[in-house]
Length: 493
Image 1 (tube, rainbow, N blue to C red):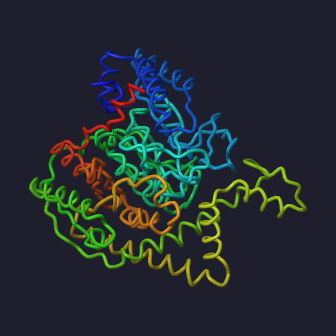
Image 2: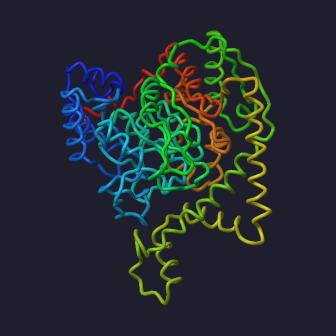
Image 3: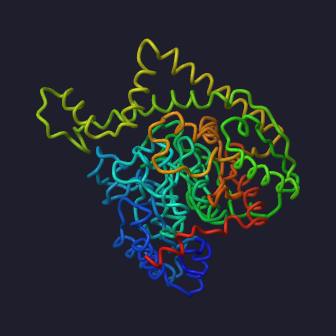
């Protein structure tokens, strides 16, 4: 087995046992990036010097007996919307092309303190708006399972980097499925924590009531270890929840006995590819054989999730993105302008890509005087009904099960001209963000050689339950051990 195929916890064990140093592992990671990055294009910046410096620090900590985390020394990639002190943070937008933050996001700080060398910042849909990583201002990322297909979005760079062996773990963010859907399309484990579970301080906001940071990993153990690192209260984040954090690895028992699962029929119906439905159905059968009690349930308001999301998220984006005006930081137009308003308009027209402009206009419209009650306020009310559907479901169920993505990875460019088809890619993931609950995507099969993801949803702040079910299923199957053929073919290029 090649080094880059190891999971993060396997690598960490090797480092702890002294079989390999963090510096050697990081160097191997950087060489791997050099080998496959021309095909995958997962990164917008590779931070080799920083990574090697941090790896040396990890080795020093280990030698001194100061290693405080289970993943000390394991190379990580970070989505390019988390602030990194002294290093470019662009959100893959021209408007922030040369922006260098003066501080670290809390999650970046946590990774730094635990001595996880950061090998680079990953590509994404501009300002996290998209489901395919085709909306980046800089490049299109390719899916390591099939280079002609998308890796999903908006955390497509993070997912592709881990799937291609360019990093052992990665951080993504999830506003409507942006961790789970790329995890599904790239054959990884991706967890969206409960809203408020992981600090959002230093995350460049898209929609503040929906955004959440989480890990993309090769298996569930890595995911639990990353949650041990990331979860917790942060006084700098007003939405952070001051709730005790369990040791997530304790929930990896391998048993689902006594747990009950609901399967919302609304998430298995129209729009789900029949072969994806078959894979997910087989996974649910397998879990039943293992002792999970499954029953089909109804969640009548879940069908309104998409329209509700596409009113609330753009409305919040329209407010959040008003700060990019060319005055204090970021891109400023060099065109002659008549007044300050002209400066704003010209700067934003040059700096924002078409999808971002579209969503800002949608959001501004929904918030405008004549339409605020008709659209925004109504969407908030329906959001409450969707959340209530989940609350009722969790009265009788410990977890809910569904596909993560309605299809496997689609060809690059296929949905570029059809905004509705693109938005339907998030039909199974969006309801979870609206409800603020945790959900994980794990590999559960293949359709035509492309990975399929099973989504497991849980009650708020009960990440350990979804990790327990995910781990039990993973241990009973071998899907998570499959690696993309790129892993082998890249050697010959």
